[in-house]
Length: 118
Image 1 (tube, rainbow, N blue to C red):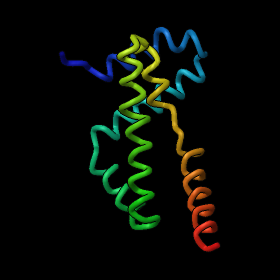
Image 2 (image 1 turned 180 degrees about the horizontal axis):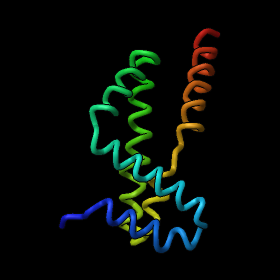
Image 3 (image 1 turned 135 degrees about the vertical axis):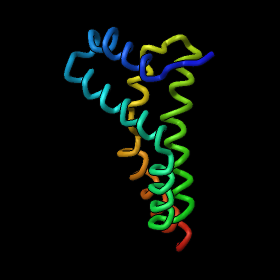
């Protein structure tokens, strides 16, 4: 079964989602989702961003960041499809946990280093 992702996203955002959350938020979600679609079309850009992140913060953090992205972009939308809530996929694709998860990584790293040094 071939799914045209852009048509599905546009249909969800323009029909159900906008009526539920409002036009302003719907436009934000639409732009965020199409940004994700562009990232899927240009994986080289994503690869280079993760390599830069690995050079700057180290390999463990790079793997952590990749895991977060996989959860946001693959697992959560997959769960929505399985549970027959596919109209919320644009919300799932626009959902970003990095502002919370990245600081948690560094907090955990700091606590671990402090415990290890004691």
